[in-house]
Each structure stands twice: as structure tokens, then as C-alpha cells.
View 1 (cartoon, rainbow, N blue to C red):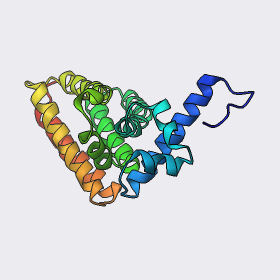
View 2: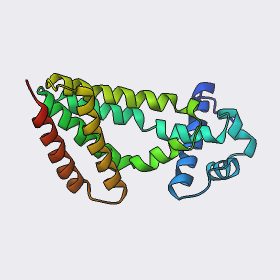
View 3: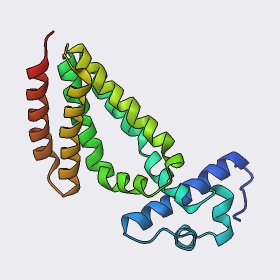
Length: 193
């Protein structure tokens, strides 16, 4: 185990070591390698038994790779939405910012990681999706849509199509233009307020 520097607390050391392991796991996954304990500690430059001092299972690293994107992603979407007053503009900002974040993080790559871990490990990730969906739902309800849950699901489906297009390599500018046009048309069709 690496020694703890005198100016570093045990907590700081633990956080740094965990970040090192998550970084290593992400590099392996991005390069298409198999995520094994041996591969992670070799990539991180640590002894094999070090891994289990920081995580219970190598699959925990998949969740941590995805979870590292959640705070910044959620904050960026929240700030984009709050920058507008009109619910239609807020919903479109929600869509645009989610596309921008997906273009950086690789939504499909992150979701494929989530699909390979046990359901109990997905709780934190599911909570983040529920919070984001609530933001969209609030805007759709504010528009006065007769069936807000259904309209939000349609918008979410259009957004998912945009995510898939980004994952296939379509340029963000093209995806954003097509997706926001479709979402705007949907919102305009259901707006009653």
C-alpha cells in the first residue's frame, strides 16, 4: 500500500487512491479492455490486494466511473434550465444541455456500463435519472399539457434518439438542431398556457 504523506489525512489518501482506481478503470473501459482486478491495479500502478481496500468488487468501479459524471452533468442541466423563465425555453435548455453533456461523457458508453452491474448498485444512478426526469416533467406541466407524463416521455424518447445519434458519431450541432426542432414542435402542440 502506498505510504500516506505526512501532510495528507487518511481520508484524503483514501479519496486519492479511489480516484486513481476509478481513473484506471475508466481508461481500461474506454480502450475496450476487460475490467478485471488485475487490469485495474496494473493500470493504477498498485499492488493487487490494494483494490479491495477501496472497493468491495471490481464492478463497483463501473458504477463509480458513471457516478463521477453525475454531479457536473446534473448541475450543468440545472443551471441551463434556471437561466430561462418560460417553461418551453426551460425544457429546450434541458434538452440542449443534456445533449452537450452526452457529447462529452458518451451517454451510450456510460449506460452500457450501468447495464452490466447488479440492480442494487444502480440505485444512485437511478436516483439521478429520476431527478432529471422530474425537471423535464415540471416544465411540461407548467406548459399546461393535458397528459404531462406522456408528453415528457415523448420528449425523453426524442432526447434518447439524440443520445444514440451522438453515440454513432453524428455531430452535436446537427443532433441538437434536429432534436430541439422536434421537441419544440412537440411542446408547441401541447402548450395550453
